[in-house]
Image (cartoon, rainbow, N blue to C red; front, side):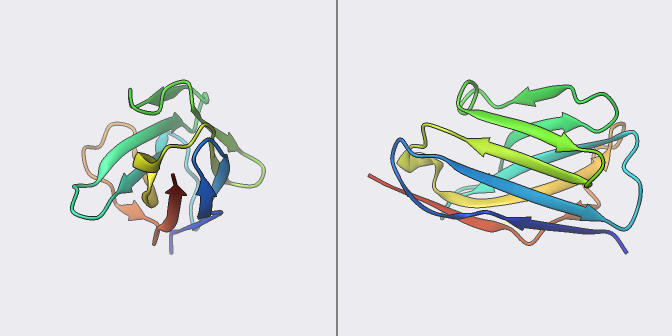
Length: 119
């Protein structure tokens, strides 16, 4: 059974930092991409960042480029999201998701972790 479990959310002041972690288990993730999404109240879920499990290549939404860094630890099966220079508009529930690189749908999602940035 595949599980994605997020941790590391919390409350931080604007300009501060948080590090989210996604622990993945239940299968090997070769040829998968691991993504972070977020959803703020009243908004649709939006893509934040991606890392390709095989080679570690990354991709970011324009809104977080230069502030967020996604990384993976193959030995621990974790995907982290380092968030710096946080803004109130970064407030959302953050979700970890995984899919085969060639797929269009995400079969695996975490339960989400709340990030709140105060002004």
